[in-house]
Length: 276
Image (tube, rainbow, N blue to C red):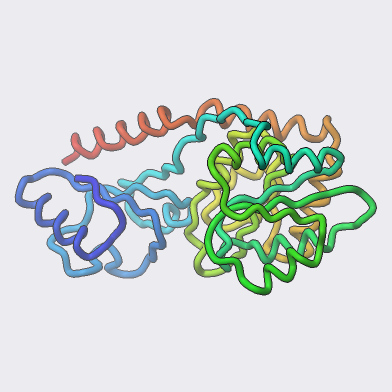
């Protein structure tokens, strides 16, 4: 049995079915997970899972059981851009700019406000642009920040093909999550998508990001000043300075495919079944 997240109904049904049919039970833990005495029996269910699959490095670290595995997911296959659409035509106007890109949620926990403030503080001596696209409600304060700087290009929600075009145009990809409660157990799905582009990435460091990611991207704290320094550092890197980081990205992307992650999951399940 594979259940998703420790929801009451999933926990109750899975525990009963596992006991009645004598089959092992694995729980996929995608969201926040706390470690405390008896945390494994949340709703007085009949039994606990036989194994756990975590997407967050921090949640995986906190789980006190041995039968666990950390699976982020695979790096997606990169799609070819299409420069003949409206977004592609609009991007042509940025040919002389050094382009940062943020794609993702506009919610408060996404870090968009943090990124906007950091970018606005960058020096004006060189042509730089920030492209923003994604989904969700945009706050009035973020709209004010966007309107205050003509270097910021807001595209809103775009199609998958348009997103490919935007990522193709970008020089630097940014993941600005602030270190707040909602992001303690986040997992690096956005970073995996960024990795497929094989470009320099600037990201804030949250507990859910594995430590070895530091070799493949520029990691900063969640302060406006430090993220700004990270953006500035990325913009000023020479080709030689980029090489080690891009090489590490290429090696990681070549190994961490969806097929590879599926094989790891399969081995984990076979071991649990054997032990059960």
